[in-house]
Length: 245
Image 1 (cartoon, rainbow, N blue to C red):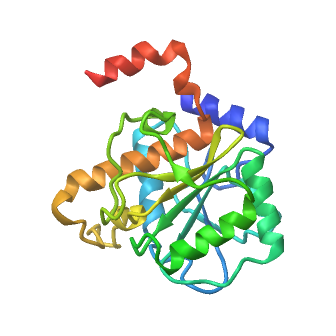
Image 2: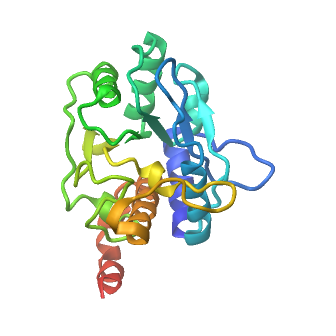
């Protein structure tokens, strides 16, 4: 019930409205659709994350992620946006830059997932170029291990993903709030299952443990996007300490 309360508080504070659905849903994941490159390289990854969110939390998430044009007003219906890719892409239209800036400065969160698992590669380079336009003057920096993101639902000290390209997350802070989260490890690749229930991609030696960490990180990102830093409140410390045992 706490998650539902956080969701309601977030939607009210930032004027984001949950999308309509035939099934009751508190929120829906949204994948950015852009020109060039490959904007949806892991089409089953986010759907599987949504399924795990439904199973493990009280958030009634829509099981089918939405795709969204970053230059449209529909962007503001989704508190958490996901940006995936594995190739170079053309610069975003100025309208998309303006909309994304507004979304992120008014309370929205963006998760960047490098599907190629290649820090410094063509997709990563393009994303960083565009982030410099979207949030000019805001540095991309390593997210501290003590940040609330790592305890927003699960207590985490690892990052998961299909590959172990970078053992930490990068991010961008807007007024001390983590607005952009960047994973180099292809999170969606580790979560994707095919229509028969088989994992679509190998994850190396970590196997199921790595996939579990990946799902936990995905849930933490979602919970942070909805609830921000509520886990920093003193009232939650006994609960957190109990979960450490």
